[in-house]
Length: 186
Image (cartoon, rainbow, N blue to C red):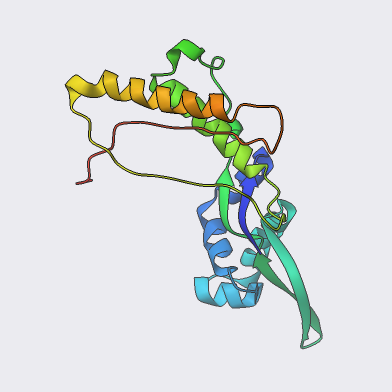
């Protein structure tokens, strides 16, 4: 079972985004038959099989084995991944990419996050080592020092780009997102 399955086909999203199928998928975190899932969900095995069949066709569920029960072959299924990640590209873009000068806008941040999501999804998860780092933190900047902070951040990043911007060695992509923190009380 994969950790994450990146869904970038509309057929996959359509198969997944049905409440009953999500419940079936949750039950298939461990290998189970349609009869076993039906008993847990209070549905008929035929109804569960219908949903499992659609999930298999979309690549979201796999048949891992089968067994004979009273002369009938029954499939044993398992979810293909622990979690599913929908590509923003499934919805499509209204308008083009934002211009570089809009880098302080929320829209530019959303474009950047979509690009990071697509890049991460394309990584070879079978590679023995994926040299990467994720850093997250919170800082507080008084409004009167906001521009100073943004200038310092830009300068620090530009220093890294200059120091490590050669043509030799492993290529890494660096994306930094700075945005107002939401209200903690929600």
